[in-house]
Image 1 (cartoon, rainbow, N blue to C red):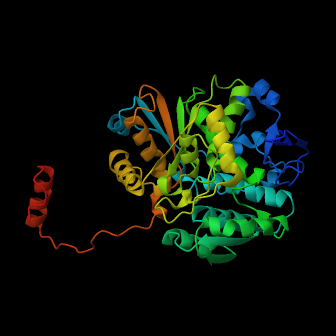
Image 2 (tube, rainbow, N blue to C red):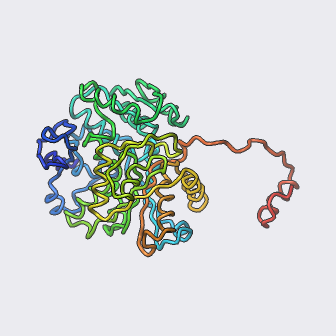
Image 3 (cartoon, rainbow, N blue to C red):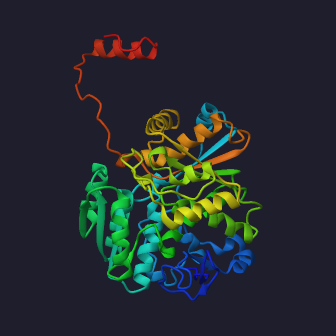
Length: 412
């Protein structure tokens, strides 16, 4: 298996360099840290550096040194779907959807759970923890169980029933919290600093964050190293956006792609602190948020990672937008009917934002655009259709089928 080419931690604010270790922020300025790699080795070897399948195909560009710590449930290697009918509906030349609902627990978060739990093993922890609106909790619980670690999962009281059922099945300890993510995360962060458990949250841990970088590596390989012009990523705290952008940057530095895509941050209007700041040209003002159907985007205070997203947007000619819950639900229905992809509301927010940006002529429809679909719809809680059945004999069944196929609808 490939060795890890991770070489150091670097502060994104003051540039201070640290040897590899479990460190959550810069000692000098309290800035966030990012992992840096020997990109020259990647440039020299090219794609031959990658081996195997799934997320750990890119082990050389991930920070887990010991192959025995590379926890897996078969994540990564998710499909990049060419969607011509939806492209025609939206009025764009070519639309690609990176469908991460195909991951083992149905969410993009399995990528970061693999590197988070792998790092917990690497640094000798016996317990993990996360504050979650749903998907992160079920994913960290599953990967912790796979690794033989205890998991303390703090789950949003309004998380969907399928997510709660999954967490109940896999978590060592499931604690339901009142309020929203922002109400608990600052208290929980202080416990992280006491080293009571390994930090599997989205706000600071560079090792956890790293797994989502493989989205960029997979998209690059799946397009023959001709990256899309635009990539739309869902944003709550900003982990998916930051990691994907950096993955493309590494690929550029290594000469594997000629340019990085323009990155678009997609948010729900009820939790749009980053999109609002980008639009207004201001710093981020934390929001007191209520419920949004896009549970995974429900963060009103994205903290320092939100500032990082905003910095990248402004530096790299990015774009940010948000959509209301009804637009998200309409995109969910459209994606299912037009392309057969059943994704959760968090997962389809990127499509809803893309639709709005195209309608407002903020994106060039002649470009190739890729949207990240971050979760399956099978973990969605929604009102069931009527279960009232009809008894058929052969003739009534024939009348029904002929009526439907002729376009007359149900013949009654």
